[in-house]
Length: 198
Image (spheres, rainbow, N blue to C red):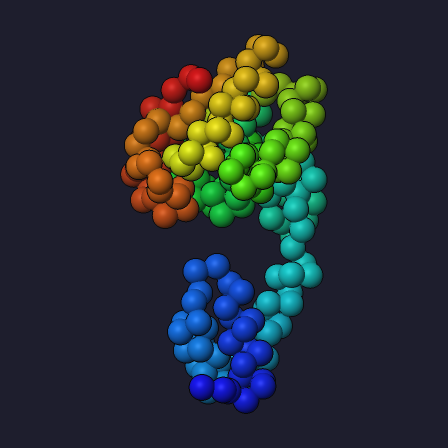
């Protein structure tokens, strides 16, 4: 069925979001059309504000409103540990357990040879540069328990071990194939407490 152009464009826009198929995009488009003008304006303003007002921290790569971010500038954080995660949403998941008090580094992806993503395609150079002149003595690799997550953790370990930096991996409390952001707080707590050296 052909929809009027404005609805078709809206469906196309929703379809570009991850995990949203044509049926869901159509449902969202029609729901949006039924919203009040005020709610649609607020939604549009929030989208634009998030895009315009957020940036990546120049130190850790986390999403932030101010650069450097509040975690990097927090003097109470443990400066000897650095938790390496795939995405900013993983920082939020780890912060929820309120047991990890060190610093973070966000990779913005994983090494994925099958998809043509190498070490230079993610935020690894800044990690290595960051470790050169810091008091960080342990790097905890908290990538997801997938083939790409494992490849990335092994690469980080190989690069950092010669520098004498202890490299650990989250314990296997996380199921293989699962994402950190969807893990419950108890699982994350056990994973951070039972991390192992690589």
